[in-house]
Image 1 (cartoon, rainbow, N blue to C red):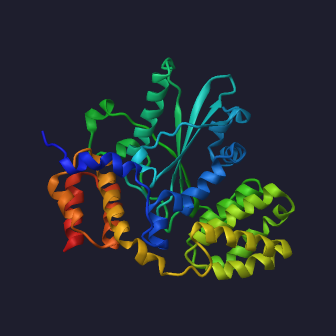
Image 2 (image 1 turned 30 degrees about the vertical axis):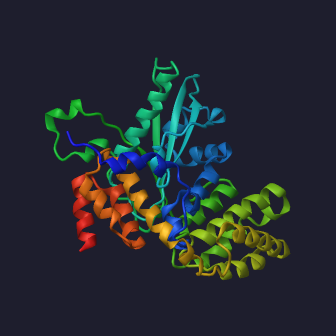
Image 3 (image 1 turned 60 degrees about the vertical axis):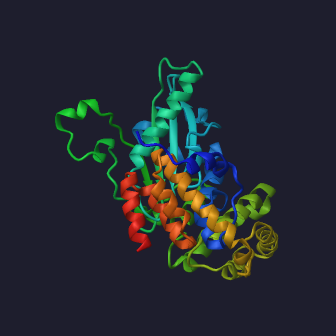
Length: 366
């Protein structure tokens, strides 16, 4: 049996707890969960059970919704995403009673990468098993309750991954009855027209923003989306929503600058919009995404950032495959380029096995 390297075992705990350092503003957004604008905004929206109820009614199949007591829907505070993978995935779990009184779990998983995830069914199966395992540990094993997985996707192209777990296998034939199978619901915003986006005003505006966050014509679309929230300037809660909304646009948009955002908001929302931008800009200064951000910060962090990026790659590999060959660890330790490490991090998440990762890593290092 192959053993993990001494170095990997010794440093695993420290890698899980060590405070993350910035590589630079753009790389930090991709590598670290607290700075991932898509993940953060999704959680902000859907950790509000009223938004979740609204979403379920409008986007789940009618035959499912008709069986649910929507008013009973509530969030489960436990998280079932692997601790080391929280940087890449966001889970929000709810329980909701059936109309005849039984409980069913609704599991919402947000995939915010710019490409579909080929192994999403496998990941969902792991999370579903963790949900059931948690119930068993609490003495609630009989009966198990169903889990309805839902993937909320937005990216630069449509989701094309097949949705049956059996689709992960090439040919199973007579062995199909020995392999578990399930499907998941998919909300692929790339397949919706703007007119098809439903929901109360806050949810609708937020989903339109998420849908178009990568759009090249965002500058043209943004004023109309923002105008939906014009009444939100009249209350404290509404202003909080707007601040979260604008922070997402400022940190997540590919084709609109913060200077352009600063100009549009007062034009659409008036004087209160101008005040809101001043408040938001101050917050962005404190959080490191100030309008006109200076680029000089990178040098001070670069050395530590390279080491941190190496540890993120190793951490992802350990989580996916448990065992890391010494030769892989040594190659990763020799890399001094953050962009290569960023690329390897994505490969570590997507690779089907360790051998495939090693092949991709060798290609990247040529």
